[in-house]
Amino acid sequence: MRTQRQVVDYSLQKRAVLRELLAGRIGTYDVCDASPYLKNAAHFHGEPTDHRCPICRSENLIHVHYIYGDELKQSAGQARTRAELPVLAMTLREFQVFVVEVCPGCDWNHLVEQFLLGRDGLAGEAADATGVAVADGSTPRRRREAQR
Ligand SMILES: [Zn+2]
Image (cartoon, rainbow, N blue to C red; front, side, top):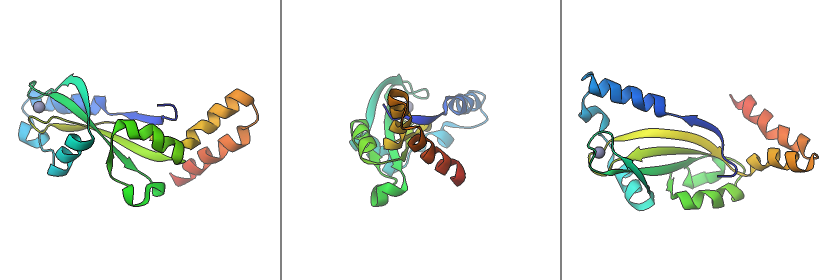
């Protein structure tokens, strides 16, 4: 997606969990614990993938996109279909997306990645294209750093 930025990839953490599982240090019961809410979100808003579940290997994983941010107000924390995200990204300045993979068969679930979307991501792009929007582009970045 065009305004996607500050991507955090959780595949290393996922591999670590799978290693723990293989080694028998944790059980499938510990990792196949998708809540009814998450399973509902996967059913109604999920994005099917071609990836087999690493635990049961009988179902394909579903990606659920959760959105967070002050601008979302009461919608914060809700699941959205992937198709809805680019529309939101053009409407809002900035919001956080968490992608969770879920197996509809065995309830395995794990965070895949998180990233920011929103119009603020276009500021840098505009600066590159025209060379005049540099001052605008630096403002949201400074604001984010101040929040940390
Ligand atoms: Zn599974």
